[in-house]
Each structure stands twice: as C-alpha cells, then as structure tokens.
Length: 573
Image 1 (cartoon, helix red, strand yellow):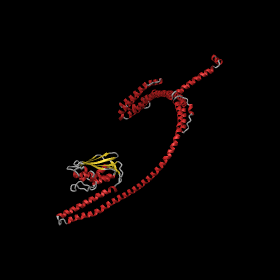
Image 2: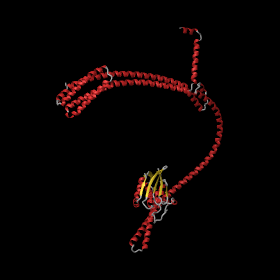
Image 3: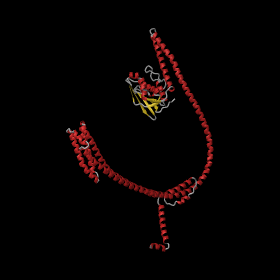
Image 4: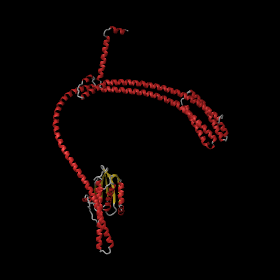
C-alpha cells in the first residue's frame, strides 16, 4: 500500500522506471546485434543439442522404467509359472509311462529310466521354483505340495515294486480310479492348480503395475515432446529473425543486381554488425562500383561492336574460301571411293581369274602326268635308261607344277574365300594342325609342347593353316636329332602375340624379310622340298586378321616365328 501511494503521489516516477527499462532493452538488443553469426549459430546448435539430450534422457528413463517392469514380470512371474507348468507336464508324462510300465513288459527297462528322468525334471523345477520370490499364498501352497509330492512318489515306487514282484493286478488297481496312485495324483494336481491360480492373480497385478508405469512414461515423453516443439519454434523464430530474413533480403538484392537493377535501399534495414551486416554493406559498396563499371562497359561495348563488324567481313571471306576447299575435298573423296570400288572389283576378278586359271591348268597337267606314267609302265622295257630318266624328270616337274598351282590357288583364296571371324579357341586350332602333321611328327620324333592358348576372333580354317605351315617348317628345317618345338601366347596392348619356337637350322638375318615373299627359297629342291609360298600364305593370313608376322633367328640356333592377332580382330582386306 505504501509503495502504491508513493507511486501515485510522486510525479514522473513511472516514466523514469519505463525509461530505465527501455535503456536496458536497447543495450541488450545492441549487444545481440554485435554477436557474430557463428556465435548465434553455435548457440542455436547448443540449444538443439541440449534439447536432444533432454529428450533422449526422458526417453531413456521411460524405456528403462518400462523395461524394468517387463523384466520384473518375466523374472518374478513368468519363470515361476513356467516351472510349475514343467512340474505338471513331468507328472503327466510319468503317469502315462507308469501305465505302459505295467502293461508292456518288454519296455519296462526303458520306461523305468524314463520315469526316473521325469521325477528328476520335476524335482529340478520344484527346487528352482522355491528359489524365486514367493508371495504368502505360494509359500503355503508349496508347504502343502512337498509332502503330497513325496507321498505320490512313494505310491508310484510301490506300484513299480508290485510289477517287479509279478503282482500286476494290484499295480493296475493302484493306478486306476480309487487307487493309491490315482488319489495321490489328484492331490498333487489340486495343489498345483491352486499354485497356478495364485500365479495368474499375481501376474495380473504385475501387469497392471506395468501398465501404470507405461502410462507415466508415455505422459513424461509427451510432455518432453511438447517442450521440444515449443523450443524448436522459439529457435526457428530466433534464426529467422537474426539470419534467415537478412539472408533473404540480401538474396533478393543480389537477384535484382543480376538483372541490372542496382538499387540497394532494402539493405539499409539490416543494422546488425555481424558477418551478415558486413555482407549487406559490402553489397551496397559493390553496387556503387558496378554502376561505374557498367558505364565503362557500355563504352567498351560500342568499340567492340565496331570491331566485330570488321571481323565479320573477314570471316565471311574465309568461309567462302573454306566452302571451296570443302567442295574440293568432297570431290576427292568421291573419286577415292570410286577407285576403291574399282580396286575391290579388280581384286575379285583377279581372284576368280586365279581360280579359273589354276583349275584349267591342272587338267592338262594331270593328263601329261597320266600319259607319261602310262608310257613308263607299258614301254619301260623298250626304253633306254636315259629315256626313263627323262620321263621321270617330266613327271616330277609336272607334279611340282601341280603343287605350285595348288599353293597359288590357296594364296589367292585367303582374301576372297575366307570365313567370317568368330570366337576361335587357339588350343583346338593347334590340335587340328598337329593332327594334319601327325605322320611327319611321328617320323621325325619331334617333341611339341605349348603354353595355354587364348580364344581370339578369327577364321579357324586359316589359323589352322597358319599353325600347320609354321610347325611344318620347324619339322622340315631341322638339324640332326629330334626337333623340339614350343608354342606360346603372350598378351599385349589389345592383342595376342603367338610364337612357334624350334631348335632347327636357323636363318641368317639378311633373309628375314625375303622369306615372306612369294617363291623365295633359301635352299635347293634337292635339299628341302617346297614351293616357297608357305610363309607368304602365313603373312597374308596374319595381315587379314589385322596382325603382323616376323622371325627371330640365328644361324644354327633355331628360329622363333611370331605373329599378332588383335583381341577383337576385324576382317582386313
């Protein structure tokens, strides 16, 4: 009452107090504006962290409370109930086995063991039940159960003794209705029923207690959630006022600046002295600089426009010259395509000509050989020795001509009658070539080995011919002693390098290129047979598969022929 009276009687007292609080408020706001944005965000994140920790603590306490209730229910009620159920089940199993013990003599030994096992299970569960927390009703029921269970075991033992002494009828009467075992079993069952009933009543009470604990925990978590939502709303308002709204203002001004409107009056409303305030003032300064820069750019633009017009005229002339060059190049490409088509047609005609020529040449050669052999057969006794020798020379020359024609025909067919490329197993290709050479291999006693060989894209027939020619040369050009030949494959940069190595007579380096040319032989026909086309065929097959072939050798120390095949070979004309 005195304070109110003093306030009413003293003029200006309330106005002075209000002025003081206004100064305090302005000081507080000024201090808040001076805070850095990082400090504000750190405070906000700390508030969020504290909120999360608080809610986590509330949730932990609630869950722990509910979990404790469930643990109590399980340990105090569910386990004793399960133990009583195990005792009841063991008693029923024992009663069933006792009947069978009396009625089935041949199973009595095993059934006696089963009855003892049931008694053991029941005793163990009774002992565990006694160790749990018991309410008074359970203790009284357990005090009644112990003598009843002991009496039941005694009459069961008596019945089993009667069976052993041959008094089966007395044992049946004991387990039947009105008998001693039946009466003892009824007593045990009644006590077990009362104990189970007590377990149910206590379980209901424990469940109700758990429900109340859960309700308290739910209420506590709901209150924490409401407090969290309110704190989140307050934090959002704080961030919006101190950070989000100023940033949105700066973003709007930046968008207008990007569109060419350099008005920064909206930035005047940002009075904070943190990083955002510094950014706003920096934008305002930047806008002033941009105005000056734009004026300079306009002048530069006018000058550049004039230069562009001059350059455009020059480019127009260059384009006209380029169009003339493009037209000339197209004409050259058309001419090249025509020549390529003509060359392909010429190659096809040449291949056809080689086939027809070889076919037409073989017929008269076969006739010459046949008739010369017929003359030699019919008139051999009438001819002089030199005449027979001349006939032999003629037959040999005709046969060599036939071999030469066949080799030429095979050479011409490599590029014209080859098969499309398919995945080809080089292991199978090598085995096919070795089967074709098996007679020469057996006669020479050659030892042929090979490393694992890859699968490549190629013409299997031509690859067989390639391996056959190289291995055949290794068998032919051998030194004294059995030939040793090894085939290997080495991966390279997008290709496979395959090689055939021998221990033969070798080749001088000056002949490395010559041996791949048609009809080039390094030895006389009397020393080594052949037409000199085999390696030329190998070269053409390797080139058709997009690879190359070469030899590495030293005279008297063997040779190594290597050829390459791309991993994804395409047909090469």
